[in-house]
Length: 148
Length: 102
Length: 127
Image (cartoon, rainbow over all chains, first blue to last red; front, side, top):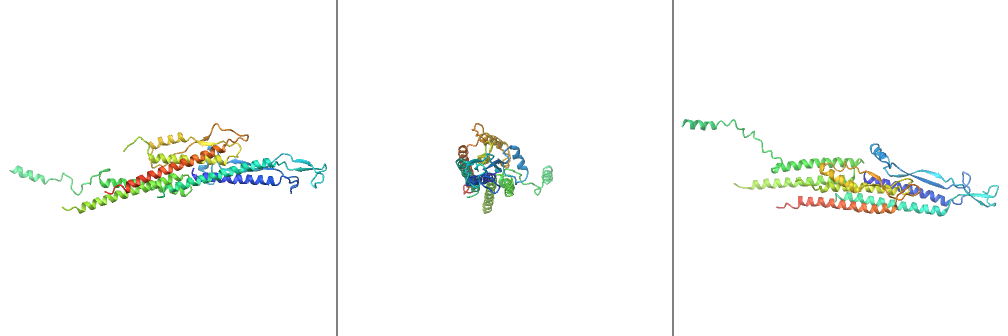
């Protein structure tokens, strides 16, 4: 229960948000990819966040077991899921990826939505970076008690 | 007359009174210089060992918060300085008494 | 030298520790702004501080703040978004600034207390 724990929590958020923005960037980059190595169009992917031990029971448990458990409140990406939305079909008979009806399957990615998600991710990243700066300042001041 | 002389002799019977050598110095816990120094020393001891314990826990990464550790260290430091000043005063007072001429 | 006013340094110690706990809760809230189902956490600062001050009147001051364990609970009355998350970024940012300043106040007051004691010990008795 100290300030270093809150540094770890904010650090975990930075890491999770960075992963999220990477996934979003991949979605944006592949918005028009109709052919992947796995066959078929690119699938939009999403991250799922999970909070570590926010319940008091977890708190009590973590304090008695080893010190390697992440502090209560830290965030992690629990899984990366594929969006089950069916792909968007566009009529392009000249495209080599067209099926027998002449339709090409494009990924169901809306760049505007991805941009909004990206902005949210960036804002959360900034917020947690300022939280780290605040915690660092508090630790610095604590050390200052002994100075002079 | 003989009763007066014999009463003089009874003065020699001071075996009832405790001997000078076995007399204890006044055990004033909170009086006098030695009492003040002793209590200051005890306080320093307690605070110092408490601070050492907390610093040890902090260094091992245990469940302690930094501000408590810093404050405990500072308290021990202040108590130590208080004890040093008390000791200085006692030494000065002793030297002053030594300089007294009779 | 008995006194019924709470001793200042143990009170300040509890104050600092509670401010730290609050800062931890706020960090956790900020980290989980995108976690589905997460609810904003906080401590009842005033209540815990009063409890701590009452405790320091009876306990020895050598114990430090080891006995202090503030209860973290959900903050009521916040708007919940569709994914179950009710963290309000503006509230957390404001709380963070407030907590930082509170901590600074506590540290400065404690430093001042110690300085006063030290100057009384060292500088005063030059007779």
